[in-house]
Image (tube, rainbow, N blue to C red; front, side, top):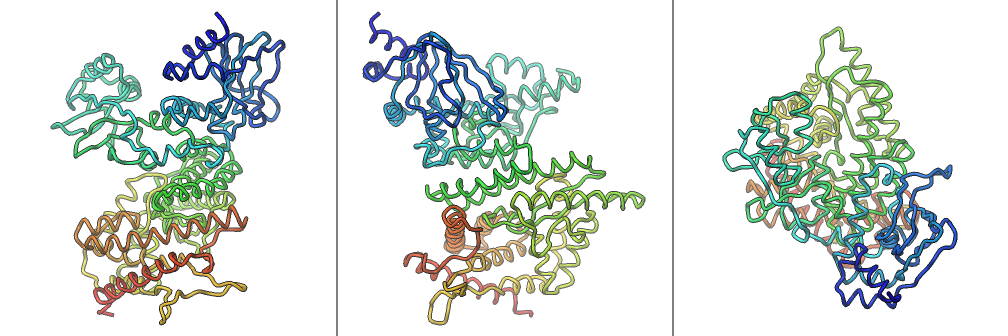
Length: 635
């Protein structure tokens, strides 16, 4: 064969070049350059060597590996024909070699220049996704994700990251749903899974999906517990079932997976389930994404490493906002990463001081409890533990106070600073038994003092971060009963608390500012607070337990408490200000190299932004008048 025939044969036998049309393959022949290595040499060093093109092995061998600080090799792989190297490095690692490569003596390769490779990625989606999917699968390997510590900045990674924010679930191939009835014997289910060559099957009852079973389910719940294979599959199935719209974006599916801790998402279309996605499938679709970043957080081994991860978050949020991703999603990304870090810290402390002597729940409150964290975040948390007999109470309390102090200190070191108001589990006031917490809520409702209204508001915005869900469920059930009792004075004080922050507008319709140094600043957090507070008042009155301001608004309009116009005014106003707040904080961190704050220089806002804020503040004033009329007439 002549050289052109050799190259064409190489392209037709090497993934993913074999996916390209014949005409495209032929057009690449004259672009390829031949290299033969007469001795063994280190061709590429990870994160150092620039990748000039993508290498296709014709004969010989590439040894790829990671080098640690002591020059020891890890994750060694040997590659021969057909294999190509460099695609992931070009697309996802700033054009630097992702792994080190030792080329063996006598090896011959053909190299396609980088610019031509990138052009191929632009015009052929399947070709492009071969590399991002490969990267996602590799990130499931502990060694690989450990050494790939710092994902490349999005703007330096061409357009790989854009796929996460622009692609919808409809754009990827999801798997067909295969199901069996609840009472089907386990052995028949296993046979059906084997016939269809699937690792997940769904369980139905009265034609509704109520659970699922996987290979792992059968191993752990059947073989591991020596359950008879004639038992119904429903007795060992996993749940809950979590679904998502076929029109949702991939990043929404990513966040839902982490929030719900499920491995499978059912895809819903026109009220019916049309397929499902697995966590591994989603991961392979992402390439570089918050999902991959969160996966790397889970593999962090030290407090310093977790601190480094948190320091990378502003870059991720900045790119989300620049791509037009909604501020509510940006909040969720921050919260998901912060939750993952906090859980790692909790697990580390338990490992250090031993298993807890009682069931407990570590809950987060305030903005963290509402999943509305920004980049200026402090600690707001508490601990509830189960009631124990008198002789064990001191031992249990001592453990959890020690536990809380260590968790708080570690979080502070990472970047979640101590709460100035001391609403933290490390404060003995906020680490107590379940019965004590019930008394707290009962007293705050019955003893309607202004300071109690503040405490109640803080701890109403709570959610479980770690521990026993049943404990917090019992507390919320108790709270629901208490809120049904007639207590107009309580709601009046809660409403009055929601009116303490007035929108920052002057009598002449100018934005109120405060002077810091020689400049004028708007306190954007204080401007947003009235919306959080007034939505909470309506949520309390209607016993709505959604944790997030946006979710509460959606529930209020669904119940008819707000009409569609009111909902849209408040929802859009809140997240417009949240976007300004997050953009300001990322700019402070990344450009000004300063600590994030809640103060926006008024002269940094455009005329349109100022005009929009004025309209928002008028909207808030109107809603506050409504609350004043509805709830505070008894004061």
